[in-house]
Length: 380
Image 1 (tube, rainbow, N blue to C red):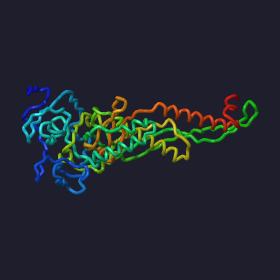
Image 2: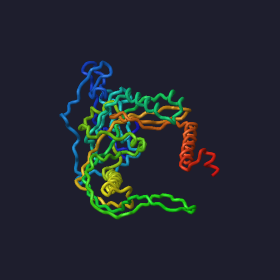
Image 3: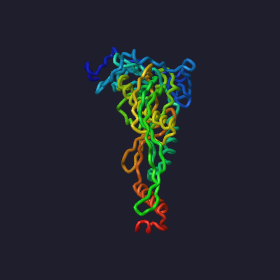
Image 4: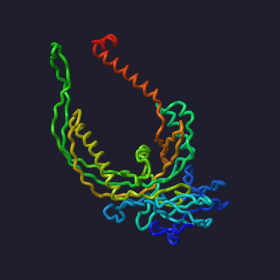
């Protein structure tokens, strides 16, 4: 095997721990089974629970006292793992924290932390099996109106890959001061150039200001930039409160990735997201409190306090299908079963919808103007 230099950050002395649970009945390698929420042997069917404290969840950690807060640019770094089952040496991407030995199939669940990174505090285990993910995909694509019928009939997902991706969650108290304007609509009549009485909506604007407090629970931030963030956003929400303290048994049989987006950068992303939500909620509050019709020029200044965080591993099923020699990727939330991804678009269906929309709008305008036919309206 090729010798690895210091830049790859690996050595035999730093060989990481693996979870290679052997079945006590047949000595086969056991995996985590989403159907039962426990370890199971795929060869003889033996099952074994994962010992865990009742109702235990990942601890909320104080943000201000965190020491490892930076991003991790792993680049082309690799690590060398020696399989305890067959003795083979395998090179893994430095971001990987779980995979399988390509020689004997045993689980390689590696320590997720080193001198650079934090260890995961919790994991949301897979509760949706790959069979369930496949069924959910078929229902999802069947409901896609703009997807060609032939694509729906022929779409068969490639083999699903189960992966745990790194996420941060943040809790915080927020105190906001705001200012803005609210508008109250009123109907106003006027006489047009033809001497006819017409009506229009006029908005009276009033200034307002105040304070707003809100506790934010588990604001979610993706801890990696290697995947399609828009697609992953479409899989949300996750029920992060249903996490359990991290144990390597939960990721046995799945791929898993450590974070590259550090705590500090994740918090900046969380603040931006929270600020947007606060502005929306405050705008709604202004409208509700003043029985108004709209709000405008809302400016918000927020103080964040009692910030805590968790580093969680969340379950994702990844797959794809091919149509007209093009590959379309999709993902399935491994906890809720929600599907999100890309599908082909039928141009003819898009054109049909546009034509129907034009006809409907024309009919509405025709009726509103007192014309008996669309032709009369167009020629007026």
